[in-house]
Amino acid sequence: MNYILKMSLRNLARNKRRSVLSAIAIAIGTALLLMMAATIRGEMRGALDININLRTGHLQVHTEDYKDENMSLKRVDMIEAPLAMSGQIEGITQVKAASPRLNASGILAYKNETIGIQVIGIDPPSTTNAPYRDGLVAGEFLTADDREGVLIGLPLAESLNLSPGDSIDLIINTSEGQTDEQRFTIRGVYTTDTPGYDKVTIFMPLEKTQTITRTENYASMIYILLHEMDDTAAVKEAINAPGYIVEDWEEINKLFVLVMELSNAMMFFFNLMVLGVTATVIMNTLLMAVYERTREMGILGALGMKAKQVKALFLTEATLLAIGGVLIGLAIGIPLVLYYAQVGFYFGDMGISANSGIMIGNSIYPYPTLGDVFSISAAAILITILSGYYPASQAAKLEPVDALHSNN
Image 1 (tube, rainbow, N blue to C red):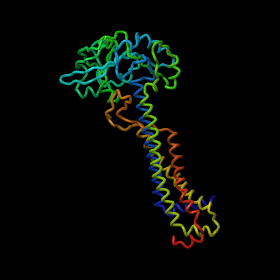
Image 2: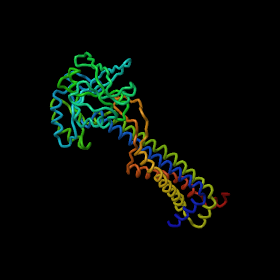
Image 3: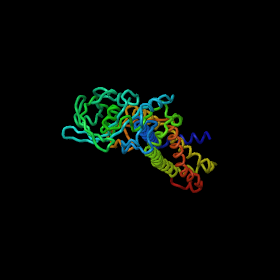
Image 4: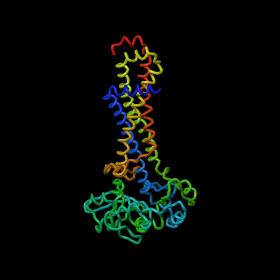
């Protein structure tokens, strides 16, 4: 077997340009697949974090008929005494924070502009508001006793040229099926780097939201964050909320979970396409080698080399090309992925609505894993070796007498 390895190395070195180009094709394919896998994984991971931290939480307590999309303010669709319930839930060890939220729809009026918005009543001291408190770019955060202040998103502030201290009029739906209008002062401007959410979402203290919507002592949901996502099932079992239902993030984000599954399927077919192109290059390289070395194969056969040894010779060449190409691809792809995992790809506003069920930030940060490195490397090597099987079989079928009479 040692002499087959030596012969394979010598044969690859005989046509260095072709061997290098074949290895580069494998390297490009490997690096591209690494980047694509990390980017898709990072996009899904980032979007999931955004959906959980901004919209759904790890768990939610609400009535059976309540849906975020319609923002119902009917008492039968809401939770009574939400602060007491959230306090009980926060007593569960695995719970990081639990807080009531009251969702309402409305219209922002400023000068000659009117924009449809969603108003979310929050309990300002709660740590569930960390994304907005940490994302404050101007002004100050809300306080629980504020009756005239609101927090608006940066895209909304920029589009209307608003800043802290400016006044806006809000027309908000009430539980009575009517609307109430009031002038509010902008206390602060926040960003979550999710334009679709920031440009339509306005926050105000829970008590004020309850007052203006005529829903005193009621909330739309209890929003729950956990220390560890793996504790979701255990906490769901531990929550005691008679008359209400408890949903976890998978149940709330059914559309998002479906998109994640579809993205994995798309990645699988993308891998097949890239590796298929790479396999074609390798097969062409080895077939050219067979035609160029037909007479040489005849001489080796006449000297006693068996067909299976000839096949092993070409498969060894394919293996060497695969290993070399994959190593080059890893040397290119891994640093590239690690770099963009830090700086990300900036896309800006993708035009995705906050109520679409899937929210994506303005940047995507690739998320590399050792599993992707090993699986893509193994797949590239295996596909390359398999692509060399047909040329190897053709070489093994050559009869020494016919091969010796060849001009190649």
